[in-house]
Amino acid sequence: MTSPSSENTASDMPALVDNIRQWAQELGFQQTGISDTNLANDETRLMDWLDKGYHGEMHYMAEHGVKRSRPDMLLPGTVRIISVRMDYRPDEPEDEKAVLGDPELAYISRYALGRDYHKLMRKRLQKLATKIEQAVGEFNYRVFVDSAPVMEKAIAQNAGLGWQGKHTNLINKEAGSWFFLGNIYTNLPLPVDKPENENHCGTCEACIDICPTKAIIAPYVLDARRCISYLTIELKGSIPVELRPMMGNRIYGCDDCQMVCPWNRFAQQTTETDFTPRNGLDTATLITLFNWTEQEFLTKTEGSAIRRAGYENWLRNIAIALGNAITSEAVVTELKNKAQDSSAIVREHVEWALSQHVK
Image (cartoon, rainbow, N blue to C red; front, side, top):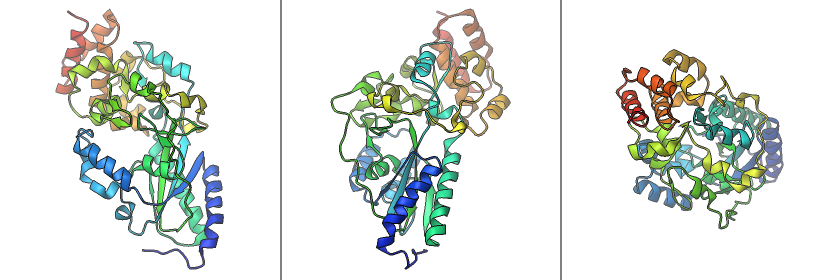
């Protein structure tokens, strides 16, 4: 355990926080906040959510237990958390709606169109930590970007970056919700920011009403087992038949709850070139992507979050979308071409898709 230098007295910390905010901004983060490590209330809600099985097959969430809500267990000596956010929206709302409204096109969650944010943000946070180290000397810290049992949304709320909306995503009054979160756990006794304790959703339930699979079963409660993001990315194997028609042309993730949120009228397009859509994924047709070979999939998703789904589930997801497409000779032909695929999972979903067109 490395302790902060004795020269770093409490009186030095406010000035250090000002510097941290400035450095973070220079590194491309739109906002930075500091929180303590008290997540007791969030732990109670997390345990209840897990007890009800809403995490589905994400067994790792239960296996980590309270380590997720007790930062000191993940990095002993942690007393503060530096929380940052980075905008990622690559296009205009009209573009997203146009893709969702065209059954021939493939809808991919906007966060996954460009380079994988995990690596980009982790490198930026490491640079931020290095700058802090250069200022204060060696100290104990660890960088996290959706890479360990971390309650990043609860931490960000405690750090004043926003509040968790009824769809459970973090919302910022001045920036909406199209942003990534990252954290630095540290033993530096930095002054903390005021938590965002006020909820600004009011009576609005637009996100609940719009959810295609009704995964938001109550305000602030998401049943991941019904969520399209979970179904297309996390779930391995067969997607429940009753949910397939509701998925439309969404083949990787879902943004509906964000698209309809009134606060996102304040969202800004990203200035990060790495988040620019690659390989035409923002306007690609289902048939084009269905015809990718496994090698093409690996090549064209290199450095992308889409790799997480894997080629088999990629084809599975597209098969469902083609089942939901308008019946045409081209759609039926492409599905029949995959009817004897080597994967039993792909064959199952292709068979279902064909049944939607060939009665």
